[in-house]
Amino acid sequence: MEPCRLAASDLACRRGERLLFRGLSLDIVGGQALHVTGSNGTGKSSLIRILAGLLRPYAGEVERQGSTGLLDQTMALDEHLPLGRALAFWAGLDGAIADSVLIRLGLADLLDVPVRYLSTGQRKRAALARLLGQNAQVWLLDEPLNGLDRDAVALVEALIAEHIAGGGLALVASHQPIAVPGMAVLDLPDYARGLAA
Ligand SMILES: Nc1ncnc2c1ncn2[C@@H]1O[C@H](COP(=O)(O)OP(=O)(O)OP(=O)(O)O)[C@@H](O)[C@H]1O
Image (tube, rainbow, N blue to C red; front, side):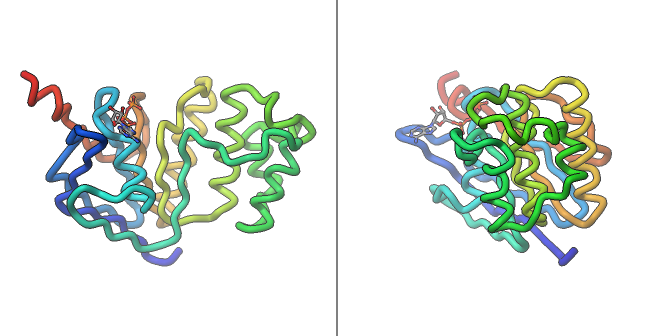
């Protein structure tokens, strides 16, 4: 895998009238993973969107080197299509999703099921299939464990560990503990609460 890097310096994020965080810096390279934690509303999703280039920071700079895959709460699969055809749309753009990936994610028997009938956990697995199909170096994962059962949580932990072992990097925002060896933690402070105190 090509070298990759995700760096941010002195980031501040403002949403509406609220300053969510400021002075936030990070620097991770291929082979590293960072778990972003923090209370509800501290700005974890906002940070991911800034790092993905989807939201302009109030201050600071982002530097991203390498292809990027974003997994968030929006699945971007056509609700009306059977799962197999919905995934095939993205496979046409990103490259084929290997059968072994679909089997590993427990999706192989669901390819005829319309996306709108999938359960919460099955939707998350489908989003993960799309992410894996992208073969991106930089993974930005927003609450990837939401809705997953214990086995699927372990699977996501294994996928992240394999991704970084293969030279990729991962930044993961999650309330839940994530067991990935060597993963660093960045706890977003509740800046707004600090101001109110
Ligand atoms: N478009 C917007 N305009 C104004 N405020 C917004 C907007 N989007 C989000 N916010 C506010 O920004 C704050 C942070 O939201 P964000 O989703 O980044 O937090 P989070 O840490 O991911 O929260 P959670 O743990 O609940 O998922 C919240 O108070 C939210 O209401």
